[in-house]
Image (cartoon, rainbow, N blue to C red):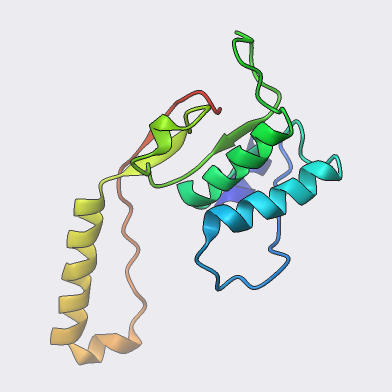
Length: 146
């Protein structure tokens, strides 16, 4: 909802590419590659910005985009197709093009999750209360893919 609202605020239409099969799979790269190969083969999303829920999905999108020639080496100008991920996977900077991503402090995230879990375990009556929202700092890591 936040993504859609922000896109609307910026004057863009947010489009969600819905999964077309079992979403309990863990082979994110293969799934995204197959899904986007299908989309690109139909002529869809060839000049889009694709924002992926994680870098592993973005890696599959990058592979499909490269096979369809959506990135041009040495163009110097802005690309009509862009992709970004989330998590700053250790390989993100070593792909071609290197993957733009959102990096977050996983140590801080783990610490906060642990503290919330302990708080719930020590106060069973809190189980009926809504889980508090915690906003953490993140960093946009701009690379060649967007």
